[in-house]
Length: 165
Image (cartoon, rainbow, N blue to C red; front, side, top):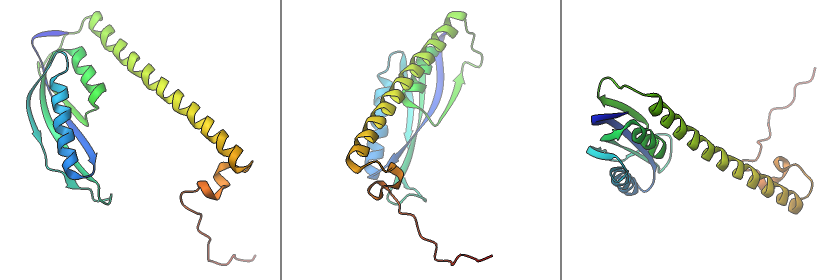
């Protein structure tokens, strides 16, 4: 779908991390990269100051509101997959007309990305299997969950006496 004026959309990109200065720089870099994407022009941007997260010690969160103009719907789809916005709103045009070629392009991009994610998941599963096998060889035949060296949080013993029937 190619519109004469393109498609205007607003993205909200959110980042979490530390130090807080790093978040602002990361958002600036993401916006710069987004503006360099094929068929994409950043029209406006607003980066909000990082704030300390309530539930996470020493972690900050920040977000940016970015208005973009994309030449075609496929470029918007690519931005969504590449930058994973927390929110997206198409501002204009109000009506979009898609051809079967446009839909094919979008679905092929979706399929390509899903295959990429599937490949990564399979690689990680295989690496996990190999690491677990090596750990079993080193630590013995005990199930990994029972091995004290691998437990992140030791199980707390109950101090309550057991009730007798």
